[in-house]
Image 1 (cartoon, rainbow, N blue to C red):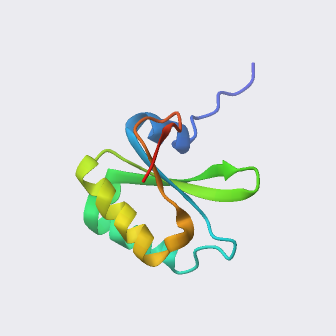
Image 2: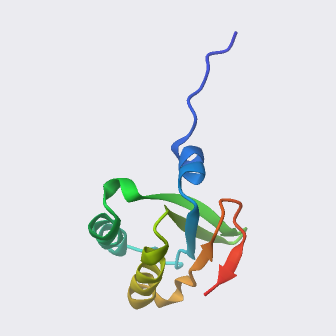
Image 3: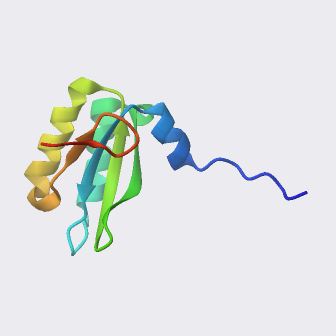
Amino acid sequence: MAPRRSTPASWTDRRRFRLKIKFAIPPNGLGRVTDDLHQFLNERLGRDGYAVHPDDWSPYMHASAIHLDDHAAVSDVVAWLDARVPAVAPVVCADPTGRGTSL
């Protein structure tokens, strides 16, 4: 019998958090913005109030997704992303399937 594998954190986070903000990664990457993003999310949502995982935008573009439950924080997070990386085109998804509406 093969050993049982643990469930990846990205799967459990998709079930745990009802909202997802998906954004494209610019061709040159995010650089220091990644550290600043985590600091902002920690201050706004607390360490257990969100999760960040890689995602797919298209076959030609990398993306990340911020998973959270706080509806009130969505506009703050999207505004933060727009102010620091305007080309990321965030999309808010109301369910973990990836369907959503562009802002």
